[in-house]
Length: 138
Length: 382
Ligand SMILES: [Zn+2]
Image (cartoon, rainbow over all chains, first blue to last red; front, side):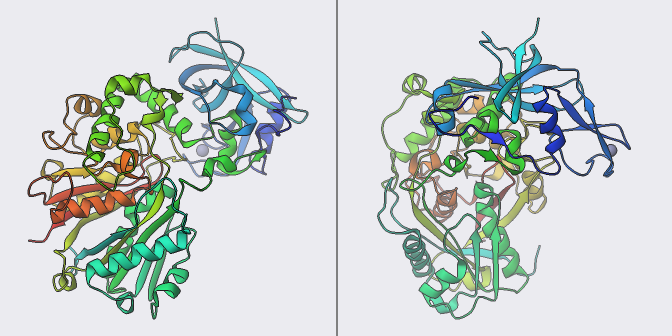
């Protein structure tokens, strides 16, 4: 539980479309929404495949590998829920499955370089929410 | 070319400040009345309004205050700062198709004294924001910084080049009595300022301002009978691009290509004028990297050259190849979702800017390009 001075932490509010993704995160499993018809992955989750129009999809396990695509370090002023986490690095990673995701940085990463390999880790934010984080691999 | 051409006949504004005590509706009324007076028109002449959908004032509320008899055309533009020039595009379409005769467009905002929109994020985050805000990518500056870092990587944009964008626009503000941020700034001062979201610093970010701007659009034919020289809406355009989310295209084919690329294609398709004909540009500058992207995406220079242009002084009045944000823009005059860029574009064509480009006859004005965006090309009559 990472609460900030009584301010509730920021968490996703799962909806009917995104719930399977966030449910898997809670189990520390990274999954990617994948089109049944054309086989292509997509993120963020949505009902229709933008490549072929199919509404059929599965949630396939991701390898957990990624490369660093971009990152920022947030400084004040930030939301009250983030106040004791600044300076806060936030990363954008690209998965070999063909999608990009925003995430946090796991641990003290040292120097970040675009293109560096990353590996998924998990942060338990509340009893019902875990978010993917990424640490430099290798 | 449509049978009827649309033109801007009037502009009006309040003072700009960090804090104005009067309410947003009052500021909207003041700017609208000033724009109508500038146009030599009365509220009874207004038959249409196009409203920013973030506006707290309803069109009928403004109409009740002004005493407008009937709105026979009304519309809202979505996408926040991307929708500024879209109000003019919609107004032009209404005039060109005979659905409206005199259209009032406006933006009234108390962002200086009011709340920060991003600060309303708390607890459980729903909708598309659930995919970035819970990780702390919560403010527009964080979202644009994510694009900017990648842009630096792909195209060699540097922090010094961003500093030149900020300093050039600040220098323009220093010539404009209406501007609210006129402190001296050089690149060394810029580099010494603190980060808000690395790689972006405080002076990479627009101001937090109170104020209002209004614009009156009518047919060129009617505008020619009014007191001000008409400012022709030579071309208007909108564009979303593919796989767009706000305010950077994290998940789409290219995070560094903004919706302005698609908007620019439409804009130039509707006119014979080319980027080389543009005398000066008022480019949406909520954050400095957006200016660099716009220079490239609207076709003034190649990819990767926007920052080089800034560093070489090409954006500076009066000596640069393309003076940019000649009133100080959102970075240093006031930030009203880019509406003050529209009024400055009009002043340039009229010849009344405080950093006037001699004989300016073609001026580009753009809206927020981290989101679905819009632009107008303004021109002198004949
Ligand atoms: Zn498909």
